[in-house]
Length: 166
Figure (spheres, rainbow, N blue to C red):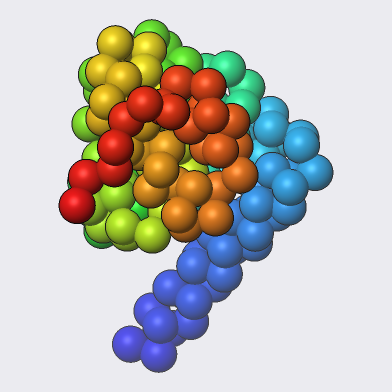
């Protein structure tokens, strides 16, 4: 039993080394190297949602949006209570032209963490692109209230005549 424990620790530590190196490569902007390292970590520990999420981010920045969405979707199946998972899946769905899917995921991100100004802003942009100006303006206002400065420009351009809901 003791040797089984030691073997498990050894395998897990190897997985975590690949994972941590992968995160470092993401921070350095070396996305292909990050994807390769995170794939090694995933092979060693396939049920680790953070590994899948991180590899999804890396793939997305390589413009492999299908791979990014697939990895992040698998991470969500393992842990569905992370606002960032939905936020980034929405972002990559948007890059694929799936506006409705992006809006839905931004909404899920906001439901999990309602103090996420970037999620309100991005959902507002997607709502605006689908013609839903009123709801987009509400999102821009909420984002601005939470400290997002990009929303202020959208509010000044598109939302001057709308009143805020009470």
